[in-house]
Image 1: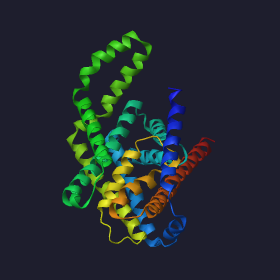
Image 2: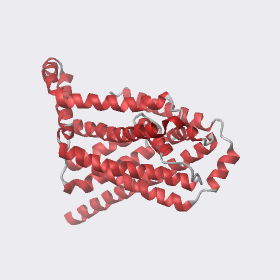
Image 3: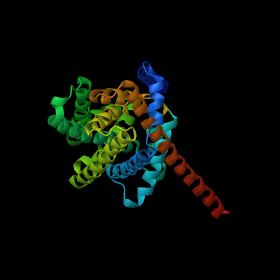
Image 4: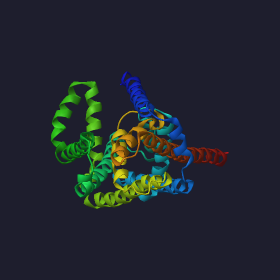
Length: 325
């Protein structure tokens, strides 16, 4: 495990560097700067508000997936904010690790429950966007030359969802295997404990009520995400673009966010914008400018909510010390 951490970090840096180099390799800088200068800042503000609402709703969805009580809502949002800050400044999915550690400290959830909840959390995004994309392509697919890579992303989300559903329904049948492993090897005890925690972490899929609630929140999350992308279209003056390119951008981003990357997902927003917007006649330089602005706004929001959460923790610690004295 200790060897894997630097390997994952290096892979993240390599992947992010490749995306960044690929995105900016043929950029015409005069055109790039002109795009940035002509942005309508009013739509940028509206986009930022839409993204912030989506971020907050994601923390509520995570709370529902974990099955935590309402009084833990503030703790879940706090952990989510720390995760956003970690994503902005650290590589290789460190933000996910930090949010898990923060929530474990404040609520006592297990590692297996937290990890499974994050996987289910990602799948909700991917499935919602994939379903919406499928409907959109059925309606407008003849107007597009949809790449095979996009269908592979959609298929990937479906496969992971089906595997988790099988594990939730039939995973208990694997218990004798993990129990036998725990009796033979010292590391087998850890695997058995993690197996039990993982099963418990997927309890959402057995609760129609919570599943329906998460689905309802997901609808709002997806809507705010799509609107954020569309508002940025308006900021660039692309009033003729529909919501479909926004959906395609978000599908690519959902897949890329599942991979190790550089801090703040440098290069990811740009390459997703190139692949998605190129289908709609947007030149590569314009697409890179769009992705760069998108990433910058997300970075500012991630750091902003993360610092706010960290300052809140510091104030709470100082208050506790003062009260104890």
